[in-house]
Image (tube, rainbow, N blue to C red):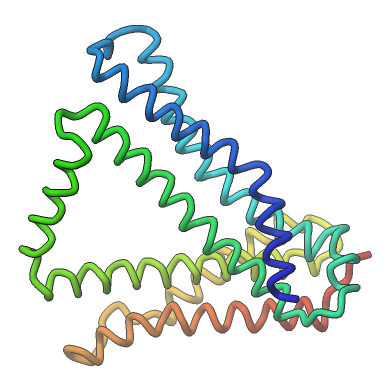
Length: 242
């Protein structure tokens, strides 16, 4: 059932975001051709550049907004009657929303990366084959320590992003407990949780070496688990859709 929930949420967001992603990629190709043809000072290029930047920024913001709406409308709004009438555990509903957020976040990164690669290949002097060869030459020169640092940085960033998503879900759930001014209470409790987390997060750790490094990875995991646990409790035991 989790797969069906995930598929439904993915399609719901995809109807809005896939056309935007396709348009963003198409504009990156058009801009690259303009640069290649040395028309970078034309009004058409300026307009296309502004539209492209607006689409990249807008698609990022739009993805965040739509993901939040899928949670609030799907589980806290009118659609909640339908969702919670299904023979599915509350944890599966939350997992579906969280996995969708992760998937769409990764897709956003992929789209931006594809646009950058297309602009580099089409607008630049280097061709696609030359780019592949350059990558093959550079990668072997990067030592294992550098790769490990890069992996650790990306992993920590990923964990923090997941923690932020769980934090938003928790704030929305708490705000919904109030009969009026739900958004205001969401913001108030959001600020309060940020302050509490800041107090609980040590600025410096007494550990050294590997132990300290592992602890910094555990912090977002612990906070995410707490956020999700409280969110589950609210949705499963305290939710009132009336």
